[in-house]
Picture 1 (spheres, each protein chain N blue to C red):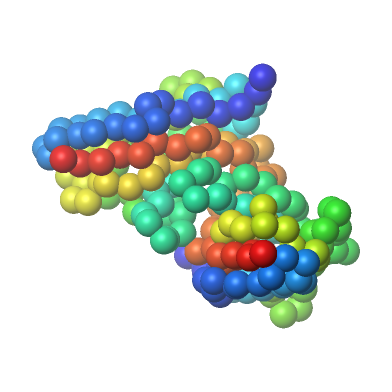
Picture 2 (spheres, rainbow over the protein chains, first blue to last red):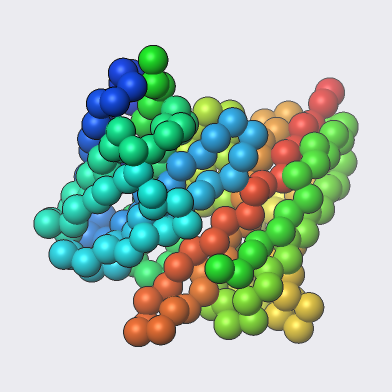
Length: 111
Length: 113
């Protein structure tokens, strides 16, 4: 089955720790995206990548980092510099400019 | 970046009602348009694309008005299971041929018995 997977589903982090969220797709999509969603809020773009080995900052990139070494994978690292990282993180992919397909998301909680 | 605006609602309607949502966008160079549905604590899922000629999928009808820069979603004969948040998405082109999607904040629909 083609789709997008994200892991883990739930993640707990202590303050000062970096954590990496996984996103993998087997849809052969060129573009991949990371969003953050806070309760009752819309999706805010963190980073996006239109092609392997290239990525751009979105609206709220501070405190986050990404890599795109393979077409299938676009991991997101939440660094200790992110002041308020507790949120629902969603990964998506698309063959631009078409519709995006989302993974099931990772809920990150900072303890 | 250009904005996409939606009325957050909630729209509280009885079963069987017809309800319509609008979404306005500010970037006249926008290329493609979509409606997504998001259930509580779940990922957004594509509901339908929006074409210039308008398109219909069962009880759902989407329309695009480029002159006034808005898209709409009409739901007829509402079901309890339609209760969700509806997100509009606008893809706009950037220099170099790339595209960037912009999401509205969503409109909440509650269908009650």
